[in-house]
Amino acid sequence: MLVLKSLDIDLTQSEKRTLLGFLSLYSFLTIVILFFISFMYFNFQKNLMLQEKRIILQEYSNDLIFRLKDLHINFDKYKFYPRDEKFNSAIYDSDKKLIFSTLESNDLHLDKVIYTTESKIHFIKEPESYYLGAKYVVLEIPSNNLWLETLKKEIFIFVILAFIFMIFIGYFLLKLFLKPMRDSLHLLDRFIKDTTHELNTPVSAIITNVEMIDTSKLDEKLAKKIKRIDIGAKTISNIYEDLTFLTLNNKIISQNEILDLSSIVKQRVEYFKILAEVKKITISIDIEEDVTIYSDKKKIFKLIDNLLSNAIKYNNIAGFISLTLKKGFLSIKDTGKGMSEEQTAQLFQRYKRFDNSVGGFGIGLNIVSMIASEYNLDIKVISQLKKGTNMEIRWQE
Image 1: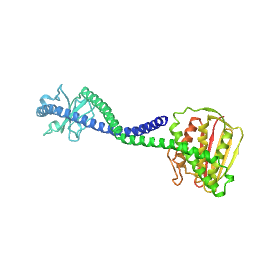
Image 2: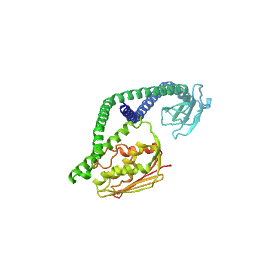
Image 3: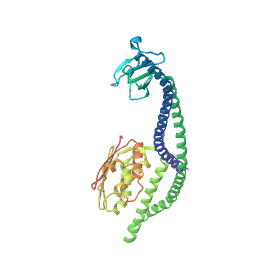
Image 4: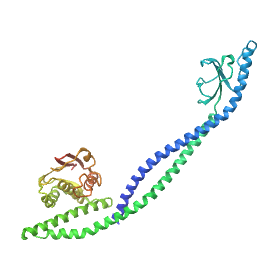
């Protein structure tokens, strides 16, 4: 049950990342569409309002032009510009120079017919005859700002409600589309859990029985076969332990204690020597005595095992591994393939593999990173292509 619960947590986290990525893009596109619709609707309502005002201003302008005509004919008699309490007005000549104005706003566009500014509506008309030299007659009335503010509030409320509704629909659809994949992943996770569980007993039995065989009393060919069995069993055992660690890590309470790291490192080096001998790799150790660390024993075993396993796995035939352990410092350096800066930056990502020619699932160094993060261990990776990699770990004792 612990394994299944842990797998559910990982799956939920993966779903959350997928949902977040999809909803972010979906939200952005939804906002763009809603703003476009709102912009079009606002302009439509604004143009509709201007058309209504245009009919009224058309009547006002006809009346003003008639009065300008009367003034033009009887200028000696009246000598004053016609005014009206319903609107302000102005006249401009053919060079767009002002002849006379009662306008409050100077923001004029004589090439338009009707438009709005912040607080005014302007209407421009060209009379058939240039009365008083006027080619352009401009009328000005107050703009209905209250109407515009009300319209903006209505649009804002519409955008908010529509956005919430669209996000809900998008979330529902994504969950619906993810269900088949989620069910498949659950089946896959259950299969992996059952497989690893079933492997544990026979592999442990093989390793235990192989270690009980005294190969010194066997002939050389049989001893080599036993050695290969031991290597294969230990490789499977390491994979099993990695998978178990990933599935149970969030559910197991760490049993932290002061550990004799010097003794542990020597033990793990001895364990991996048989794997190193297959590739004729020489392991040189410089281990200071009485080096300690406060940690969970199983987790420190996994950290060292994965570092040593990688140093062997990605090393060259007849390569070299140099292991140094001092107070607060552990270094495992190999003469293997090495990595580029780009690969080094992605080194601790789960399931990330840079060389498909060797085995593994790409989870070992992710486990190392998880353990290092839990115990505040500082990991430094120094690597060069075709020269090798040096993994350095530092901590406070």
